Length: 610
Image (cartoon, rainbow, N blue to C red):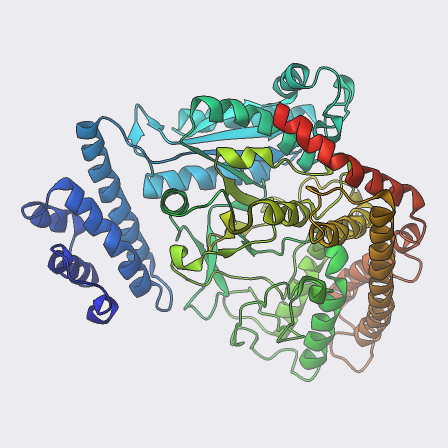
């Protein structure tokens, strides 16, 4: 503690801060401590003391990771801080901290949505940001931006809004009727169709997350006009306000916890720094499509099975003692070099999630049972976990928006999701390049990740995913693959054009055309090289599975599970995979990409007039 204060100038609260911290470490009840300190300090001084103590206590409990008891005390610390802030507000007349509005686009994912909403409510209960008055968390509000098709899912989402509102979390349902009303009000002549979509009323569903976000922006603009001291956050329905951390229990790889007071830090950052837009990341499942993870998955599978073949089948599983390193940035991506990442590790070890006594057979069967989840976006070896860094010290310039985790003040409402009507992937990174070119250092990233869960507990797979076709055990992700490829074409075309001051300076048609086609050809070459490598790795994996010398050869359950997985790999990444044939025939979609890039500056002008 003394070391952490050595570089700070003395102030009259420092002795109290040292005492405060020492008592926390000694497990003294904080409420008693508060009473003791209250005899010496007024409310403002006490608030300052608590705020100064937060990073010191965090550094202590995150060395190396907090126990549940430490987390509970840490959360109690914020309960008491909130109580002090409310005391001060009763004297000053108001609490001038930011209100936070959370928008959740969702399409036919009621279980994901319920888990997401529960995480927001739990976060409010544990940290109580903004206080709790009249049975309501006063500074937090949620909008469910529904893009569902199934009637039963629409009803479930409406019921969830009512249920969580009754529990104190203000939750408003923003469905098809409400969205259409905003479109009629702000886009009566269809001038904003490139932004808001061109969906007819009788098919007003599955418009895409980008279009749904843009329609929701209209709602948020109204809130900003009446409540300027508001932050707006977009998250995805398959994310939660939790983190996963390495557990000290050797039987577990990760444990989930509410270890970050997200709302406290968002208010702190936007209040103290010149920030307009902030983005976080995700931990847990990768944020990208399986379309760009197949090659590195196969590397890890081949390595795992090759190693396992030399072990005794009935020996106790020793895949719990692996040295668990965090995944390098973008290590899950087959072409991480496209984004400037040089990976330190090319193969990652598998860590068995089973608890209790079990052997290598049990480990392998469990592994094979869940392997098909890869096509929903899970990665068995390349999950990331949270690593502590004090949030204000984690601020860095950003260039990518994580559309499942970004926050902005009212000025950020001018940045709609671009090219949304094309329904391409990589919308966030593309938007990020445009934002960076426009506002520079006021666009940042911070160590505020959210937990990403591709699948839900009730199933062995995800809920609805756009363009993914399921027929029993067969999973066809070809459409998602195509959206990913052309999303990359759009992203890197925009990156090159923004370096030439697009969209402020509109390039000629020829420059845009040449940029898009050159980017397309470069990416096509990279995708085809990776495809060739992947085809070879599928054959290598199949030979390993079918090798009679390996102890799993006669294990029917393992062979059955792996046969399903190999079939889906060949369907989506094999020599005759239809997605690769589709991206070889691209004139129509490239034409639409070029037209969208040309019309984007006009769309910006129309949006600003809205």
